Each structure stands twice: as structure tokens, then as C-alpha cells.
Length: 369
Image (cartoon, rainbow, N blue to C red; front, side):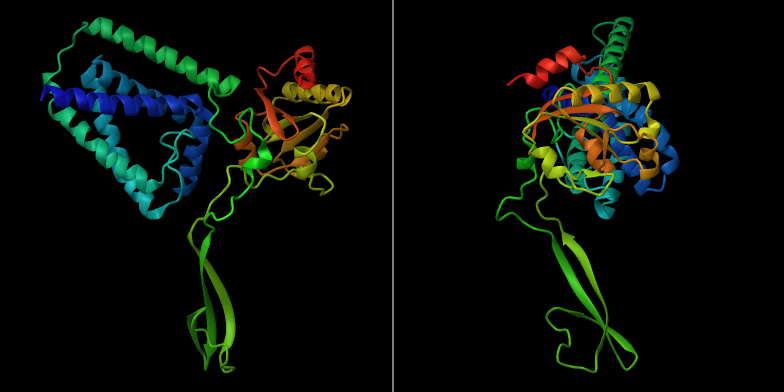
């Protein structure tokens, strides 16, 4: 019995600590995932609290795992674990059936699981969670109640500081496809022989006022009495999707500059702002100043945004603005604005608005071989 309790504590504690930590590394990414869920379940009014909810959920998950694994207020941890499992197990079953969001996000961008994989993972975790709850009366505090609460308080403070650091200065570990050192064109290639999207195509034909559905195998190609009405294609399975997809950078004049930017022999500095209207004007001003400096130092400078054309036209400042899909911009960098230095298509550096290098340091980075 004791061995089973220890094994259950290790399994539950490790999974919950890992899950809470990897999401705290990228709290904004987890907030985006919550927004996807809110939208899927028509809960758009909750979008404004998605970041706060993301940080709190990460903290609860981490502290529950910490309590269970290290026997610090373990009864509290066991209760939290069981409540979360009771809530999320049936929820993940609904998600698996309806599939409103393809990736559950339970391990952030570190590990991607399908909704069915997440559901079965929860079913497996329910076994040690229930076992710990059934035997939780045997738990004896070994450090004293006051000391254990002090330890938990310190852990929570450090956890919140860790989350806010990653939020302000970018994730300490970058799990995104645009991490530093990535040669972007390679990440856009679909390898030969990989699966492609599969569609089921049906055709609606009509004869004598009666409509009938046909497939490619039996549609009435030689019977002119049947009149074609419409064609329907339904995606039945996803094929291989490269890590970098849907990356386009289109100028205000409609020119696709993607290949020019990725193949440029000169260093390219990108200022990325998902929505210009949501950025503090002082941060924009500093970004534009950096753009003028880059242009005077033989470095191409582009501003990537998903803002509308009318919003962009307000900034008639001689800098090159490009339209890029908002989801792509969120994937490129977790900051608004954020900055990426490219050298011949390779990500040479990434910074948030809070730690973008000063011009002297940036000059060294740009000119470094």
C-alpha cells in the first residue's frame, strides 16, 4: 500500500508540476488557447480574462503537483487534483467528440496531444488520483502546518514571478517554430511522401425534381437526364502540416515580400505588432525610431501587423508595413510589439519590447558573422 501511494504521488506530482511549468513558461500562449476554447463554446465575453485565468490555472496545477509530490499540505493537493480531474476528464471527452480545437494545450507548445490522447491521459491519471484521495486520511504532515504553509507561499510567489518574467521578456524556453537558430525556409517544406489532407467529395444531381447524392465512383456521368446541382468536399483527415505555414508578408501595395525577406543577403529586422491600435504609443515611437536607425545602417526593416489598412495608413512615416495573419504573428513571437533579427532566413535573435537591445549592442549583433 505504501509503495502504491509513493508511486501515485510521483506520477500525479510529476505530471501536474510539468504541466503547470511548461504553460507558465509561455503564459500568453496558454491564454491564446483558452481564447480558442472560449470562442468554440460561445464564451467570447471571457476573452478579456484569458491571461489572468491562464496564469491562475498554471499556478493551481503546479502547486497541486508540488503538494502531492513533496508531501507539503498533501491533503490540499490531493483535493485539488481530484477536483481538476473530475472537471477536465468529462470536458476532454466532449472535446474529443466535437473537436472544436485540435490541440488540447494541456502541455503548452512543449508537447502536442490530440483531444482523444488527452482524454485517455486523464483516464489513466484518474486511477492514482482516486487512490490518493481514498487513502488521504493516512497522510501525516511531517514539517508542521505553519512551516508547510510558508513553503507553499514562497513557491507561489516564485511561480508568479516566473510567469510574469516569461510574459514580459519572452519565454525562457522557446517551443515555437520561430525560435532562435531556426532556418525558416526549411520549416516551410513538406517532405516528399508525407500524408496529405484527405477529402470526401460528393455531388448533388437532380432528375425529375428529385435530388440525389453521388460519389466519384457512381455519379451519372453518361446520363444527361441528371442535372448537376452542387459539389461538396468534406475534410476527413489532416495531412502533414509543416511547422511554419501560412507565412506571408504582403506590403501595403499588395506585393508579396515573403521570399525577398527570407532570402535577403542583408540582415532583416522585423518589428511585429499583432494590433497596432493595442500598443502604447511610446512603444510604437521607440520601434519606429529603431526602424529609421536600421535603414541608416544597411539593415532592412519591416513592420508586420494584422491591423486593418485604415489603421496602418495612420502611420505614414516612410517605414514598410506588411500584412501578416494574426495567428502567424502570435506564433512568431509572444510580445506586442516584439522584434526578430533575420540573417539569410535564419532567426538570429528575438526580443520583446521590454528587452530589445540598445542601438550599440544591436549593431554588434547585426554585424556579427
